[in-house]
Image (cartoon, rainbow over all chains, first blue to last red; front, side, top):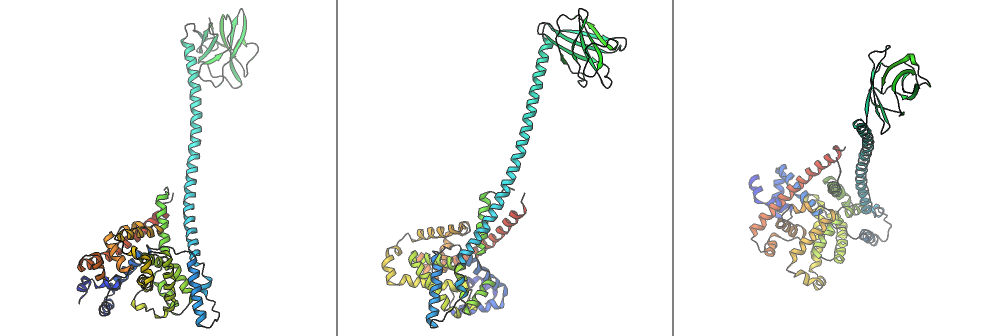
Length: 265
Length: 216
């Protein structure tokens, strides 16, 4: 029989399953010797069968192993007249359990490492999101506050009783300008320093109300307030507003020589 | 990469299962020790093959108490006949399987066994029971899917011949199908089985590579 004919005869499969009679077995074995690839094929099928059989494993009751081993031990002792035969097998009675233990430990270790890693990643992600959320909230709060301020200011500026008072430059700074928004009804005052020269170091602008010839402090203009509107102290019955340059922190009395802008109400 | 339980669990099970299979070198080594009469060999063989022999014995005798007896008898025979094992005539596992199978079949033919289990053996729903057994045993090691890849008509032929020791003629009578069909099913079953396990091996390797390289 040639190789192809042999393969199509199905003898190889029968041989692997142990179904061949002695004559057939001899024939198969002749072929296996002659063709190494057939031997490989037979081994592969045998292995697949063994693996398939393995899938039908059912663990026997745990006590079975020691029972069988001691039975075999007993056979030997009766055969050899009770001679002590301390076999290595005796020490290995826990082998099955040991194998199981090692395997489950490995599997558990494997699983827990992965779970731990995942947990760590999740925790990290959670922390990041939490920090981001806190930042976001803070910004939200800031925006809300700014919006409220802007709305208040807007309402003030739109108020029917709010009147702008223009302050124009004096001889020492003809180009300087500022506007005071003044509302007698709501008792609100805001200064808009439209264009005041930048104050020299250690100096700051202060605004005064002229009430019956007396200069009354209305407050300081922040050094780094830029062109922002700034709230001032309300003074009753002002005749004019005046801005002078004073030492930082302001003065009790205005330095009249340093009057930059003024304007009548 | 996120490790979900669904993804990891089968991998762990498959790895565990592959640890239990001895390769050919291991089988030869242990066969030599068995032939030389070393008792540690029988203990190791029990660890590796006790469950599968017990599973197959249980398939034949269908009673746990009887299966325990048969398992014990089988291992005693394996021990006593160890020196008679001829590696040229097949693998150690096949040899052990034959011993266990024949011991189990002898048991089913004993009068005591017939008395206690006659009704069971005559049960026409024997196939159904078979399927349940297969399912139960494979669930035990979580590889139901691999077995499921083989159609049940091929599973049945393999189980009758390989596990239960039927000849092809006996299968023909038992299933009521032509001998030619039995033969072709046997051939196809073996080829498919081989294919399935080769594919499975590749899947496992790919799984392992994915698991260990795609971290983070």
